[in-house]
Image 1 (cartoon, rainbow, N blue to C red):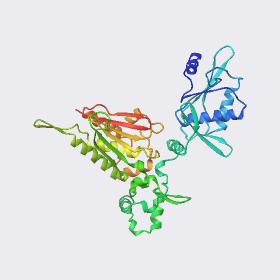
Image 2: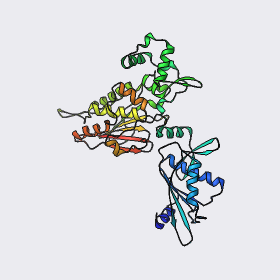
Image 3: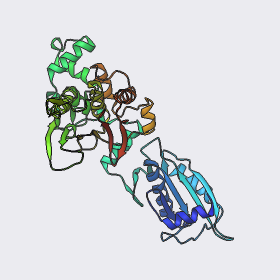
Image 4: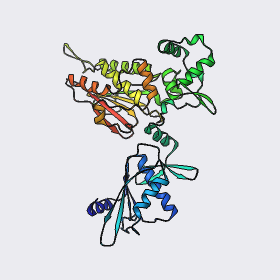
Length: 395
């Protein structure tokens, strides 16, 4: 970085990607505070720590020439997993130098500061770093690929929360096992091996994925599994609603019922002008099914109380799925067919049930089908804590 770039950063002040630090090396509290900032940036989208700058932007400079060695030592000994940052120094004037420590977004989340036997996990929120809540920590592990929320146990659930008929159909079709001819203990053993049930210290509990695929009324324990559909009159969100439904059920039912509700509202949107019936622009059934399936398969179920929301307008349908894109996934990569399963258990079972054919092929198919209709290209974007896919009406 150049001196002018540093001065511009200082002028803009601290933010979610920039932290200023006075050089207080040798102070144990400062060592741990620096490690805290490294983990916070690593756990989110990365950032810069500039050493030799006061909180108010005044340039105090480095106290000696051993800063790089100190930075690398902190990142190896206090931060877990270890981080190797990019380090550079910038001369501000004849006397003062500052150090710029570039922290990349980590791919071995969750990062933490090690203090003896205690582990402290931090995230960046605005211009400050703070300890992560349990829910935020769960998402960090989930994003790393080391932990997947869809196989987490759901407290207060038991074997009795599973639908025996649905289990029977699945095991007979996919595993060639008739569960009517085996004992309950043998069945539970099979369910544990299939990640449908987990054995915990407090007993056996159904997993998130097990409840979503084979449960009885999963919305009782997982209210965030509900799909909220709203049909607005016109092209904007107003209080003038044509329809509103909260759709519940296990995921296979949820997909079918949601597609049915969308199609029913599309049919009702047709109008009569003179002697002619003017049909509302249609969307191919396979497109609607694919978008809904993607939403329920890839959303972040760890965000409690956040439903999938589908907003229908005259000129478009918005599918709003809770959760940002997983690590390494970008909008452009999705368009090329790249995919990372946030919920591998759910994806695997939906594949077995023929709801998903090939991982990653859905978005390219949607884009192609809508292009054939001469409709505007579907819009894919992240908006806050949601991933939004918008289908626009064709000609």
